[in-house]
Image 1 (cartoon, rainbow, N blue to C red):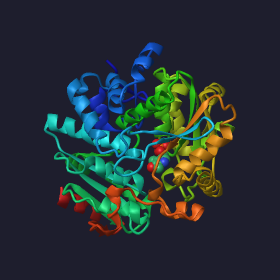
Image 2: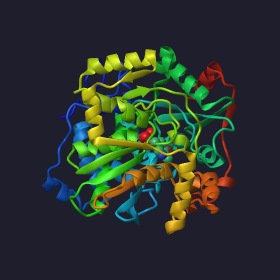
Image 3: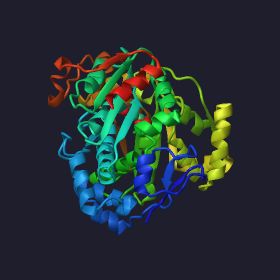
Image 4: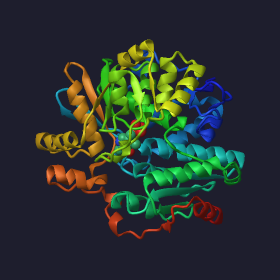
Length: 462
Ligand SMILES: *Cc1c(COP(=O)(O)O)cnc(C)c1O
């Protein structure tokens, strides 16, 4: 039975259910499984012909154990992916010579975050129902996370969800994907401030122990283990679609390191992976770290790929834990130093390990636009700017054409129409289920940048 331990070694050891409900560990660390289930070559062969949902069951079940009854888990998985518009759920598209895109944008909100949040919303509801509990989900968003979290939680009986976004600072498509949801358990707050203000308010609400406990606050951000787990599946699925047992390289547009860390877990479970390539935009803390060995915080600058505009990469701590041979006290020290000094330097040994499994590159806005334009010219395919960062870096690394290079396409181009139109002259259209998005009625509260007012709003509506 798999147990979960904190990367900082001081929080209680928990089972799957408690880890999902807790999110962050009480010592400030992140939960990781104490051991990784293994698939043999023979197992992989048997898995390779399964449908997406049957595969998801086989990959995730060993991490969940008896926390969810087998038939219930199967039903939750089928329900999570029933609203995806492509029958393959995560189809692989050939672009060039042994070059592929893994399309992860066929879910309800058109970004890969649906894979995790559709599943997490249902898993949470399952535990809450069983325990006769209620929860308040709160989060701040600059775009994609908010709509995916709302879609995952809408209409669930045991939870209310409050999402803060900076007023007039998210795109119209992104805002409307949140504010046109009609379910009565969904609350959108447009805060008169920046995304950082929204995040600070959310942090301060969590820091208020009385409020946190009274409202049973929970976060569904990317450090929740359940989100990572749901993302492990499509790495297997992509390899199997290539139909061979040969190693594949994956290039992943990265912000908080959640998505690419899921690829690392797939590799540890036995999936043959040649290289995992971290692709960042000009907010390139990870690319710099691989190059120099120092992980150092700098300011954030806005780019065409806003969901990757991050100062630090929270899930990187999970990888560090392995790079330091799972020594929680070493990670505790590193993260404390990092908080004080805003940087730390990896040990020789950790850096060597990191560079063995991973490579990293960056693409700035100019390269992003050039890649969007080039791919449209080559094969009439429209890329969203996040995917374009990935493909731009993938092409830099794809030297040996005998090894397949799969870039994760993390969002639909119609989510970022301005950048796509500017690069290609072509306006990307929203899929049919969202075609009337721009004329639907919106529902949101506009509120001052003030934690006290937001607190009373939440109290009044829950
Ligand atoms: C969130 C997001 C990313 C970054 O994913 P991480 O798991 O934070 O690395 C990349 N692309 C898109 C479109 C996203 O929404």
